[in-house]
Length: 98
Image (tube, rainbow, N blue to C red):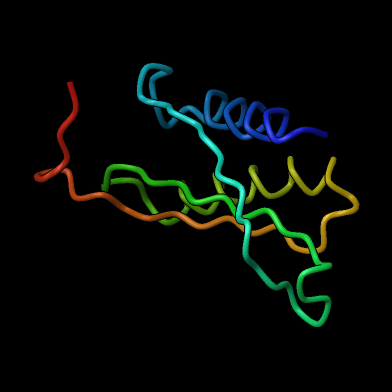
């Protein structure tokens, strides 16, 4: 599975979750060049997804979203040592976009 395939999987979950309009979703990936994973160190592998969204969603909504992303990725990334997902709330009063 390519890095772009993973981006597409996460993006699809975001589209289907019902918390956003499609125009509000931007999905990107960055490859870490320097890392260590558990006891495997440099030989380990991981995927970490950070979701930044405007504040206002409930903990239940955020938990359902992180759970759906994790389940989707774990279902296809059998050879990855660690898959993690977190959510960061952005302050609505200070966020700007055009």
